Length: 418
Image (tube, rainbow, N blue to C red; front, side):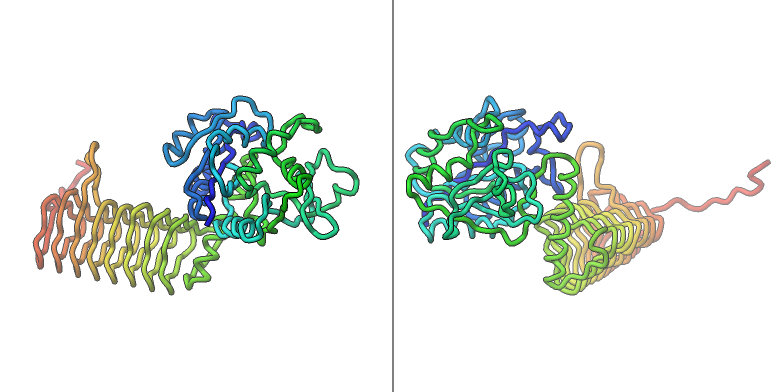
């Protein structure tokens, strides 16, 4: 396969966001937009990535660190000028370069792979991702010739009366031949309504040179949604949330209320598991088959939950491994812990994992019964087949087959009002 390099445009100010942050570092579903775009590119097979930064560039660089190379755009003179700043890093390279926007964060990697494949297979010098919109207001229009080939892209403010009626729009994602892009971008000018250097003018320049150009129409228009303000930020977040929930249901997970259930990226859930309403499951969590989760539960990072586990209402779990058949029914916090198989955790139980400076682990064995309102002062190890009396505060290890009681003797003082 030809070498494929990525360029991510992330230099904009994002004035409509009303923010002191760089626009592209605002988070969509827990992850910065520009980080999402980098991850999309890498999942599509693009590992050599250049990010063009400008306004508040240090914030973008803090997010991406050394996962990408950087080019700098000092003045915002248009997308053509943005890409031009990355050209020195393409010197001597051959193959394809994919152009992405740092504020279009929910493109599917499979869509990007299809774009690259078509460009290579059809020997196209420019391949554009497009979409069909009933109302294309605000987007550049795709101009095709009588044979259906892409001739040019016309920005809406520069479109004539006929072009304004075209409903195929430019999605802002491109795959170019590296060498021809470098030549064409030197020829663009700012003779347009915006007085900017449009990257889209490269298409017309390539066509005038007789170079083959083409397009891929995206199947799902929500993939190309961009973020220019906080309303659009929320819209993109909701689209991604529903997409993730839908994909899980298609794989055999029951989600009772798709709108109130928040399941983040990279979560694995086994078949026949039921997720009750108002449940949040953060990125990287693994949940087995036939589990019951929620309602109103919060499963945080680094959790691994085996098959047939019940996580009940108002339970928070963090950095926990929970064994097969274990129950954590309700009103419980289990953080930095390992719980064995077929163990029951009583209502109101918590692992006291933080001493003010460091986090510590609690380990609970198989077939244990933990009474209600137990406090485990970590680090502590609880053996197999143990019983912990309700209301206990456990500060020492408990051996296998033991009953542990850690509470003060009850004292009743009569006539307390005298």
